[in-house]
Length: 399
Image 1 (cartoon, rainbow, N blue to C red):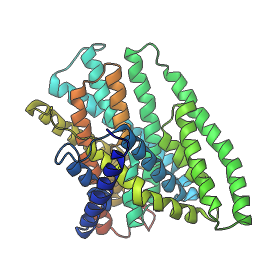
Image 2 (image 1 turned 180 degrees about the vertical axis):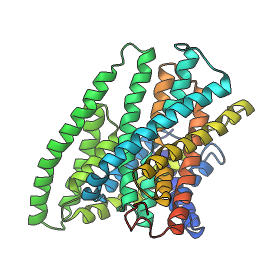
Image 3 (image 1 turned 180 degrees about the horizontal axis):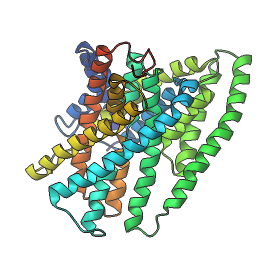
């Protein structure tokens, strides 16, 4: 592949993504649905115009980092603190229920295996894949509808961040069954240290940004410095703490969400995200799909895998939200908002492949889950908000 071929790929992605985003909007569906379908069409599944490359994967990673930074900037910090304990409970059940049901599903489909056997570990790992939540698509959908700052949106966002952290810890424990090098306790310590680091460094950065913002309001140096903070936090989270880069980017947004020009920074970030990085990220989900090795047995397993994964999140998160005194419509929104899977599920799957807990043929099941959840979640959320337009605004309390 010649170096300049990337320009052809980018041009195709941008044109198709925006074309299908417009079509999706005309059909009253979120634009991200159109961008994901565009990736399917131009990818190896249909036309084969664009192939997934390392360059496109890195561009897509920048896209999701910027998206999570914007989500942090758009967060109401007071609402986030208020929903924190509830979000933690929702995240815990959002991990435990899919883990249990996913393991049970593998046993039902392939037969029960004795404790400690390879098939037992594979079953547990299938459940581990289901624990992952990708909040980026839900975030974009809520932002399009103007619901991200509401109590439901903030709870979904908070729970999804906590969900991924718990999921990473679970992954480390499961890998510890097969790999003596894995240290689950170290993961817990690193996670705690990251939160301490984010609080201390975040407070210092907040004071600096607020002082500069008050002295030089609405100048371009503010969003430029904010972008640098976002990228630095994403790097530090992955490199030194083993936490997902999107978590670091989200915390960078949280640090700046209370300064006067937070909306101005978000506006500038949205330009980059809307024009280039966002379409690449959402289209890349479709580009990763390849159905060449799909047979009827694997297809049947994949259908059940997708159904169990989606239902497990809705039931686990939705019922916990209801127990925390959300009304039924808002509980359902939270359950549906938590059912998307994305880059974290792929990372977990890749890790399982590298340690022998997952066969490569099951990547089709994971990709199908990502595609279905990515398309279904925004559509269902929009229908739920249209049907219950005022539930989020009245605070989501049970009547």
